[in-house]
Image (cartoon, rainbow, N blue to C red; front, side):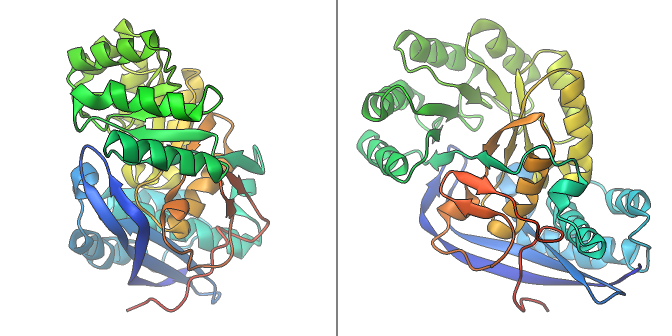
Length: 360
């Protein structure tokens, strides 16, 4: 079954609240959508956000990569030779991981539909449902406490708290949230590269001594500072999760071999899609290192694809797939069911999300 055509479109959705981290403030999802059409008349869809501060990609660069480089490389190939198609996709240009991820998930969506099977079962079928956290943006203490209590009232038992924008106030923020939500809510702390190594050790130690008890701390220092990541991991009790430090399987090997982190955060927009992420999962299994599955600011189209990977692989023990919960609306029917903190897979073929006419 050959790939006949690839089209590009746009997804634009308002967020329920501004999304604030140490790196950026965002008020809406403005992503690139892609549709891959097979000669059997079926189609698969994918999505990529322009997250320049992390991947270096813009809306224009993603669109150009898909239209001018990726599509000419793979149109006409036989999708049933999936290894060959994915190798062509990854090798047709360097970097541009988000553009590749959008096409990768569209190809796998089409592959699953062609085989009339849900992607999560085709990739391993480890579980049918799992729990995700919800992100609390970095703001003033009172606002973060209010947002945390609102999230708990919505049924979320795991909060991912953004810090790193003002290190002097980070302990106060987290202590106040812990006091408000009580001991039974898990707190994941995400500094988004916002601390120096010594700051990170000081702050995490203070959190430990204050009884805040974070489940983990994500990317405490700059992505390329492997020495700093090793220093933090060696000097605190709280597990450290590498996010921006890990794009490729080679990055994962380095981080885990050098003990620069305890866990790895897999994001399809960093890996270049599900197919390369499967290699990263295999590496994590080798090192006996649990993984988180995460997302950027994405609609349920690409978050659904990440959910299929999470449901497929047992090494993924943590989920940060709150993109649909952060959007003001959920525009696409079908696919996994995002019901508050619980994500439940369906037997819809492929990824399962039904996408309207967005295409140029």
